[in-house]
Image 1 (cartoon, rainbow, N blue to C red):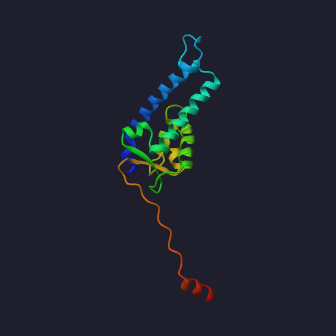
Image 2 (image 1 turned 90 degrees about the horizontal axis):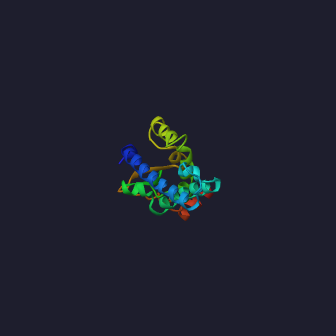
Image 3 (image 1 turned 135 degrees about the vertical axis):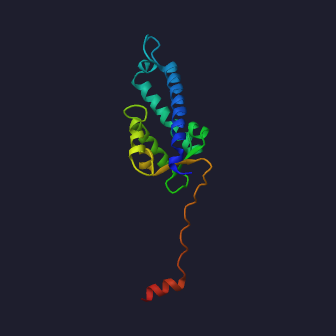
Length: 165
C-alpha cells in the first residue's frame, strides 16, 4: 500500500492519539494542577513544571509505543505502522527524531505545519518528522524489508590480482 493510501488512516490515528493526549492532560491536571484555580481550563491549572511533565509524558507515549510496536495506539487501531524509508524497522534514533519534530508539526495548532508539509511537500507525502527521520508510515500488513546483505568478501585470488596490478 502506498504512502498516499494511508493518509486518511493517519488522520484518524492522530485523532485517537490526540484523545489519549487529552486524557493524559486531565490526569496530569488532576494529580498536579492547581485545584484552587476556578473557572479555568485544565491547561490553565498547570504550572510550568506540570506543563513540562505533561509534554514529557506525551513524548514518552509516542516514542515508547512506536519503539515497542512500530505504532502508537491510534496507528495500531487503524492498521498502520512506522518503518524506515527503506522499509525496515526504524532505529531508536529515528523514532526519537521523528517525535522531537512532531512538536514542530503541531505548530501553530493541531498539525497545521504537518498538514502543510504533507500536502504541499510533493511526493511522497510525509510529515516533517518523517522527512527528517527518514521514516514513513505504511499499512501494518506491509512486509518489513530486510536490509541488503553485505557483499561477500573478495577471494584470495581477487586480492592477489589487485595487488599484482
